[in-house]
Image (cartoon, one colour):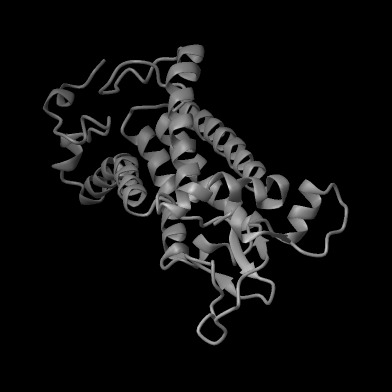
Length: 278
């Protein structure tokens, strides 16, 4: 039976299906009231994460952000339009909203994105450009703390059963992981040359920033922005970058194991003409 307090639930809690129980919020047990607030705000965290992702995307469009955004949209669509209709399992009887609840979209989003970040830590080396960004490690650790709160909150607020959030976590892990490996396949195709050429126009027009691949001169100098002339152009007016090393994001051992089927490779770098990527 739907609780009476659902009708008085205010935005954005009602919009995000995160209505707390006022009897607990204003009850004598302060600890329970604190927990109820915690679950309510944890349930709307995906909204703020999506807003933050959108702001970041508009201000600093990067290859990593684009792939992550596609993963979020892909998971949301599959979960809403395919999985929930396939399982056709209702939410708990005392939920403030109707419709199907199996699997939990909140749980899939939270745990799936956490899995994405785990794959980045396990598979990608620390020299990948986005890992050098300020606050990357702090934000990653903070998200690992928030992800289980988002999932658990759905049970305590009566929007999902434990089974529904567990299945949500499983489907989130599968969908986000599948797209992560699709991303790796695209970025590593033809030793990074395919992705470099594909995004050349976007980067030259400042539409997109490349932060999965990085480029170096043959002497190991990292290149950012305009590379038509070498960093030491002022010292040698005739010096030009004749060839580039494309630094792939995968750790060398992982790359050899996955892409080369155990064949030993000397480096995770390949060379190409600068005009192919800039």
